[in-house]
Length: 101
Length: 233
Image (tube, rainbow over all chains, first blue to last red):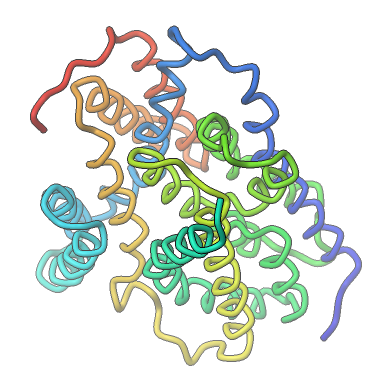
């Protein structure tokens, strides 16, 4: 078990950088408006950010795009876990039968 | 709040995160083995999972790690890839009415993507409670740490996550959550705007800025659109 000082320093710096992003919303939270345009924008954060996080993944290959459609349709009828299982099954099938773009 | 209801919340938090946490195991293993390959010791990468606790930032920085570690550029890389958490915590902030200030300090520390997403989903139906939040967050934390440590030992004997389709679990979780959110024309417009903007940003600039770019574009769309109107989606 060895700890290199420069590496530990970098890890601590990363921890602070990460924590700064995660606490900032709670610090500004009380000052955010409860109605109006900015409130509308904030209400859209879950849908907007969730979408942006995964957007490039969906277009990695035809398999991923097909599996994404399967997951989205399944998610309207099944609990999340069922939709995820179907999505994973679909991506495995897709990778087996479909090539790259 | 009586004791049993706290325990009930903890239990539903743990149950809610369990499948996601299990899907994260192959990635924790991969991170551990990758870190050892890049010259980090098991103690060092474990420390990183212990105090940073941010999967994508950990993968990115480990992949560009050099010795002696350039701490400023590694911290900047972690900051940039985690900028999305500014939006996530701002969105979660008004939904934590049951939390004391001291608890929010810990909430922020544990605010990984999966934890945020699960709690936004919970907030659609019922209030987020400390029991639920910390049950889910500590469940993922412990499993992530254990998987990272195990990865440093198991090394290259591991199957890659994509061979068993586990790399798609995270995307599938987020897709199923988005379908839950996108029930109005407005929300659907937000999703489409964010999708297009993040893809365009990524193809022009590369890097990790596409998440914040797409998120902001979706928020702007929401601000400009007229108030909600239900559709049968």
